[in-house]
Length: 268
Image (cartoon, rainbow, N blue to C red; front, top):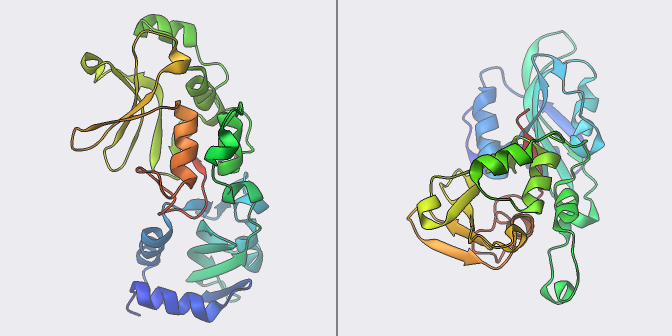
């Protein structure tokens, strides 16, 4: 079977809008199908690896995709796309033969994921951008790094750090938003000669920084150092910046054009 994006679209159309799955021809390379879907939907979540199901998998993380296979899934990766889960990998059929599969299942979209920050709504309103970020990503896990030694780190860096950044690190831990925007566990000092501290970066080599002017860190503006060396300033803090690029399709550094829903991929 020759795999192309058109072939994948045809397979998905044949599965229809409801819960459904199909075993694929034996000569199909499951990694090739995974790569094609990743090119369409972004970095996947791994639900099952080598026959072991991720214990954190629940309805909000694609558990519906596992239902057709009971305990026969060998490897399964999943994407959230609108009101649908899409999954692929391998599973054993009724005769016990491991085969490539493509599976879809309905998905309940949390209302908060579709609500972009509204300028009129925000005006004069004290918004907790970290709580909004939890809602946007559907993050329900306990804090990942509550014991961060900020006093030691700030002493070593010679400056205090913004409180929303510290909450982000404590809450999400090591990983990347949408598997794309990597959150630094400690600010990088590579651009200190330019007055910038780097708190995150992307696969496109954009660096997300603060203009660390020595004043109140909670008022440091975000500056994007683009891959071509241009500095683009934003009058907001880190958590607000992440919220806006995740769900505002008009933001100059938006990720909303590439990902229909949003998550944090924790690297443990």
